Image 1 (cartoon, helix red, strand yellow):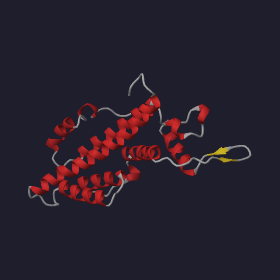
Image 2 (cartoon, rainbow, N blue to C red):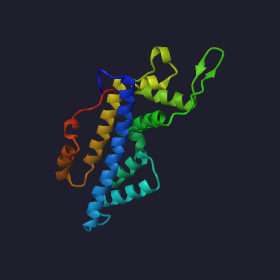
Image 3 (cartoon, rainbow, N blue to C red):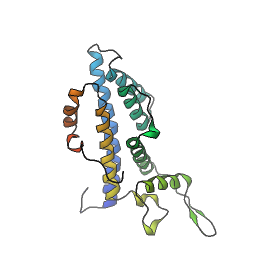
Image 4 (cartoon, rainbow, N blue to C red):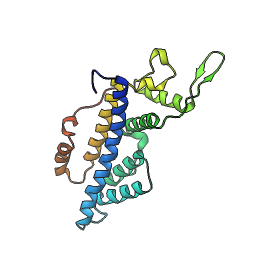
Length: 198
């Protein structure tokens, strides 16, 4: 992020590009798996299975969250347990934030006798954000965007997307290749870095 620029604009760009990066990453992994397929590997190779399933998910316009689940299931051979996976839970929130920032809907606040209540989806988003230590600013209590349009959340989003990428490589069926892939994607320097507000 540019320290001299508009922090809000930089934060929004960082959040959006972080999610775009993992989408591109999954598309590239599908191509890696396809490379094994054209060299006569069968679906017994988890990379081929992953590739086929990701390509089908792309055709049916599945969400990035679903593509991550498909990738993890294909590489691990186990059913994806999203409720027991903190790395996925954080990424899921980041995707939700990106979606709300990219496709905003009118925010209709209900005015009661003694309170203001934002729409249910915003209340839910604020609750999740608070669980990771991100709250709306004092002068904008009902504006969930003030919790994310800042350097701290943008950095957290970026590092947690990286954490998911590193996790996916930890499932790679060829352990001897993992370090090279981490290096290729520039993830080697993050391997031992864990995000804040976990």
